[in-house]
Amino acid sequence: MNHHDWTGVEPNDPPLRALWRDSLSLAPRLSEWRRYFHMYPSVSGSEEPTARKILEILTDMGIEAEIVPGQYAVVGRVIGTGGGRIAGLRADIDALPIQEIPGREYGSAVPGVMHACGHDAHTAILLGAAELLSRRRGSFSGEARLLFEPAEETKGGAQPMIDAGKLDGVGAALALHMQPGLKVGQLQTRPGPMSGSSSEVILEILGRSAHGAYPERGIDAITLAAQVIMSAQTLVSRRVSALDSVVLSFGEINGGTAPNILAQSVILHGTIRSLNSDTHSRMQSELETLAKGICSANGGNCSVTINEGYHSVICAPEWVSRLNSLAETIGVEPLVKPAPSLGVDSFGDFTAVAPGLYYDLGCAADDGAPPIHTPGFDIDERCLPIGVYLQAGLALEHIV
Image 1 (cartoon, rainbow, N blue to C red):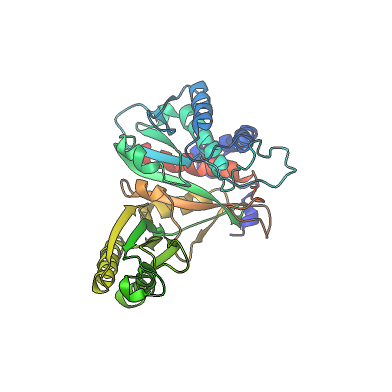
Image 2 (tube, helix red, strand yellow):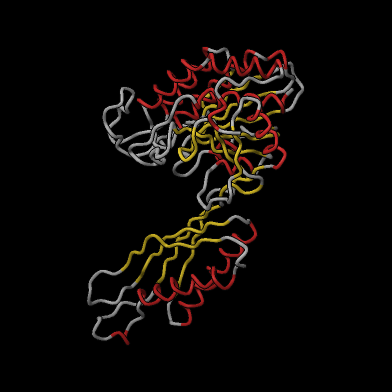
């Protein structure tokens, strides 16, 4: 189906037709909400004003909601007649430290901060879905749990929400993301992995300092670090199947105090990305063994710190089928993402807890739209009612 055909298409099913019409009728409010959050963005760790605004809107809707103690997460609950299943709908709410291009009437009012990843739109869509689900409380027995996640762009707010029990009982986790590579009226997803898992790696390599004119008197930590960096790449090329996917990258190296002094210590700071959790764990273990072995064999030492990042985002096949069928009821073209990405999203922590769905929603008016994480990023707001319809419709399928 051509992506231009979505305008004017209505579902044949009466409840879905009503849901679509309600979604379209919300368009002015969706735009108002999205532009408010766009104008007043909050970077990760500073989302309190955003959280309070979300709480205010949900409270005005008559929806039970709270700011999670010790976090800037907001959790709302739209509870039906009781005793049914729970669907969790997630929107990330933080912005990025990027200076927006000037000239937009709704441009960021916070210098050096903008919603360059579409989280303002994600927030508006979840608020719209909450409104439509709240109107339909009598038609379902379960609960729609509204999960407004902070800090997605940095340390991730998903796991702290899980640790606080906010996903307890959730049987399905649903999320979308703006995609300027797709036009309004298109979406894409895939069964299985959508994105990779990640971990942060810190190697502290210890040698013995000496004057550069007498290297035999010391143990050069920079030379050891160079050996570790080059040898570590063979873990990917020779220890992982070519049919598997792993990336090992070091983005920072710090060490040394003067050009004529052997470095006492060097710190390597990097990341591991993969799609398979077993492969990821094995790569962590083998990197530690390799680094310590190289350093020990040359008279040095190495300490290894691995900080777990996000889990892979995994899409349950049945939810992919449900999304595609629902999209077609309004003429939206469902595409298959050809391959997973080794980029990460903290929504993977949610899909590690509950079967889930993550999809890219087209938000571009035409070809050549600026990509996410750039100063020129923007959306065509016609995508907002589409997102509301899909998120609310999917939730209803689970909680009726």
